[in-house]
Length: 157
Length: 163
Image (cartoon, rainbow over all chains, first blue to last red; front, side, top):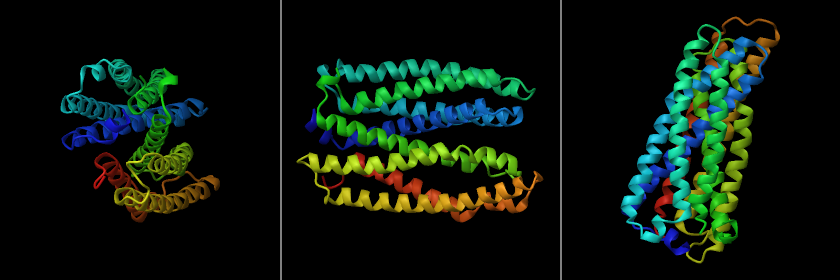
């Protein structure tokens, strides 16, 4: 596996670059969302809590979804370009990648709906609870993606 | 499952997860640069500057461990050496990214000090001086240098030219 990871055909590199860059941006934007909303959660001043929650929810809409799409396209592209053997396609590490990716998509879509409603409600001074829910989901996604990074890089057998 | 993961795999995971932490911090700083472009009130500026602390912690840990585990990997693997051209290029870019990032942090820190000074006097009125300090062109350029250098390091890590 070490030699397989070290020597890849050149045409896979672009696909892998897109996948890794998308994954890094996905984790980065989720980190921004979670940090902003959790810091907002701790603020006693409602105006400050609202400002941080709004920043986090906007980042989710503008950043997380595009990053996920880039990561997912890169993943599929890499898999098809690598022409992986059957034993790799059935491997645990690839399965973990798919599970976190597909389950993550569902959670991201739920978060997007919550964020859209949350942003609307923040205009009237409510909506921080929806924002907090998004913050918790972002933390769960971050934890899941650390596991995915472990599976993708360490490739446990 | 954990028992079947070897030394190389753990080193690679720690190297990659450190790089993810570094990029996550850069994404946070980029989001803050964009979000604070129109901020001119000290209270709002200080609110956003609170997000800098977790980012600073993450960028320090991430950049240091990325280098440590990267060099460790280059020593551990027979196929690569720390003096390979693409690894040396990555180390040079790491130094450039770190240096530019630190200088950007100092300049944004000056904007934060100004916001604290203005806020400390009890005046939360919009300040053109604060707005100019937050939009400091040199700080933004330095942050861009850090981000682009990190992106090029990622390109080198994927393509490994000459390896």
